[in-house]
Image (cartoon, rainbow, N blue to C red; front, side, top):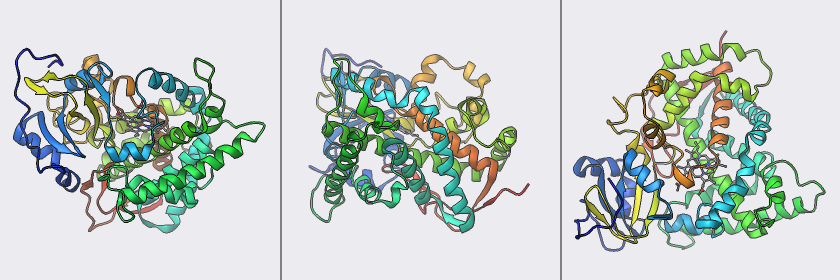
Amino acid sequence: MAASNPSKPLPLPPGSLGLPVIGESLQFFQDSDFVSKRQERHGAIFKTHILGRPTVMIYGAEANQTILGNESKNFENSWPASTKALLGPLSLALQTGELHRNRRKLLAQAFKPRTLATYVEIMGDIAQQYTQKWQQAETLTWYPELRSFTLDVACKLFIGQDNGCQTPLGQHFETWCAGLFSLPISLPWTKFGKAKRCRDLLLQELGQTIQARQSMANPGNDTLGLLLQARDEQGQGLSQDELKDQILLMLFAGHETLTSAITSFCLLTAQHPEITARLRQEQQQWKSKEALTVDDLKQMTYLEQVLTEVMRLIPPVAGVFRTVLQTCEMDGYQIPQGWSVQCSIGSTHQDQALYSNPKQFDPERFSPEHLAQQSTEQQRYGYVPFGGGIRECLGKEFARLEMKIFAAHLLQNYEWQLLPNQALDLVVIPSPRPRDGLKVTFKALSE
Ligand code: HEM
C-alpha cells in the first residue's frame, strides 16, 4: 500500500456515504459495531460520511505507517468540528507545521522523566484516598468513581487544584467533555451547545488560576508552573489565551482516555482471576513498602505486559483522523483530496495478521520472548494505542505511570468482583466503558 498520485482515476473505496448532509453519523454514534460491520462487508478499507465529512476508514500496520508517518506531506491532522470548536484554536492538537513542532517541544517539558518522578507520590496518595472510600462503600459503580480519580490527579498535577472533581471547574469540565464528539449544533439544549457554554466558564476559571499563579514569586512545579516558565526557541513564553487552551487539552487528554484504560484493567482482571493471581504474586515484594519509586515501577514487568495487553484489546482511542492534502491511492482505491481518513486503532489491534486469536485477553503476547519475534515495524505501527508519528501521544509516559501506580496499589491491597446482572458490553464513544458503569464489590485483600 502506498500513498501516491494515481495516473488514471481509481475507484473510490466500497461503502456508503449515507444520507445527504448527516451521512451515516447517527449510525456511527448509535451502533458500537459500526466499524466492524462495515469491515466484515468491505474489508480493511471502506468509505462512509460521518461528522460532516466523507471519510475513509482503514486499518493495519502498513496503513498506520503510511498515514501517521506522513503527516504534513500527504495528510494533516484533523478533528471533528465539535472537537475543534471545544478544544479551541490554540490547542496543540489543532496546531500544525512549525508551530506544532515548536509547541510540542515546549509542552514536553511537563513530561520529562525527572518531572514525572515528582508526580509518583501524589498519584499514590490520591489512589489511596479513593480506595479507602471504596472499601467503606463495599459495593460501587466504578467507572464514575474512576473518572473522579483521574480528574483529581489531573487537576492536582496540571493546575495544583485539590479535589478537582468537586469544584465548579470539575463540573463544567464533565459537560464540556460530553460535547466533544457530538453533532456541532449549538443550541441551549444540545450537548454541543451546553459544552460550548462550559468552555467559556472553564476558560474563566483557568484564567483566574493562571493570574493567581502569575502573581506568586514562585509559579510552582506542577504543569502550569512549568508552562508559565517555559520559553520556546525564540525565547517567547505562551500567551494567556494559549496557556488556557493547552491546559484544557491536558486536562481532557489526561482524564478521558486514562479513565477508560484503568476501567478496562479493572474489568479484565476481574474476568481473569488467573492473571490477577500472577499479578499479585509479582506485587508481593513491594507490599510492605511505604512509597513506590520509579525504579520499583520499572521492575513490575508482568504488570507492564498486562497493561499493554489491556490497551491492545480495548484501546481508549478507537482511531485518529487526518485530512487528505492531495488525492492519493491506497490499496488500489482513490482517496480524494479534502476527505477525512481514519486510522482505526481498534481494528489494527484485532488484525489477525498481527495478533493470533486477537479477541483473547493474553498478556503473554507482550512477554520478552514473544516481542523478540516481532519486527520493529510491527511493534511500532501494529500496536498504536498512543498513535504514532509526529503526533504520538505527548502524555504516554504520564499515562503509563498513573496506570501502573493505581494498578499496583489495587493489587497489593484490595480485591474486587463483578456484581451479577449488569451489562458489560462497551459503550465506545468517546472512550470505551462498560454500559452499566462496572458494578463491583470492593474489599481489603484477605491475607
Ligand atoms: C491511556 C491514556 C492515553 C491514550 C490511550 C492516549 C492516546 C492518544 C492518541 C492516540 C493520540 C494521537 C492523536 C492523533 O494522532 O491525532 C494522543 C495525542 C495526545 N495526547 Fe494522549 N493518550 C493518553 C493519555 C494522555 C495523557 C495523560 C496526556 C497528558 C496530559 C495526553 C496528552 C496528549 C496530547 C497533548 C496529544 C496531542 C499530541 C499532538 O497533537 O502533538 N494523553 N493521545
